[in-house]
Length: 223
View 1 (tube, rainbow, N blue to C red):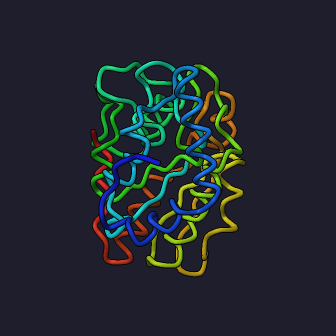
View 2 (view 1 turned 90 degrees about the vertical axis):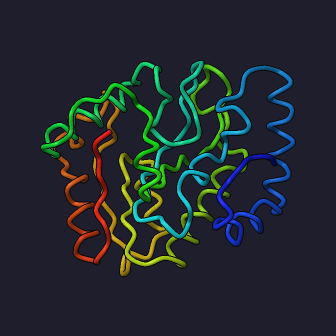
View 3 (view 1 turned 90 degrees about the horizontal axis):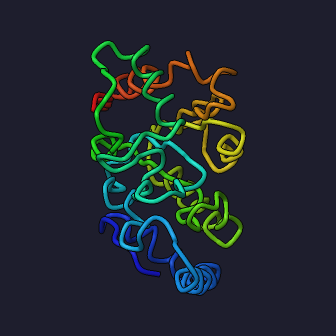
């Protein structure tokens, strides 16, 4: 299993990468790559762990799958590279930010690396996808890996904000010690559900109020 990640993650990721389910997943991905497109590119599969060191994690925003069209996925949940058209969920995230954060202006780029560098881990539950086939790499081992990562963050760190949008993400609350971390839940930002609770959730302000109350630097959400 190849992929770059920040060295601070090594105590967490190195043992997980040796698990049998990850060996099976690596074989599955090798076969998938011989048969067609896999997103994101192999060197960016662990990009979330490269951009956000374990020692800096203050917020975890959990997604489900990478974007599955050309040029979209680059290893961070909800983020797209500079120059790529914003997917609907990301557009709705930006709409919510314009309502919550006075200094936030609709950005030119959907690259969320600025958030990641401040300690926002943008973690998809499944880190790869077959081109143009949403959900195609689910139940192959990635969920075991990312569930273990969430547990380790919960155990190793203090006062992290876990942002769980939608029913799928909210099931992950079972992995989190809610006595020492803050969990925020709402509908998913996708167009299918955002009007049922995502718009008006206030999560970005709530994140910063909590971080400030714990003596941590708030996130600058502007891009």
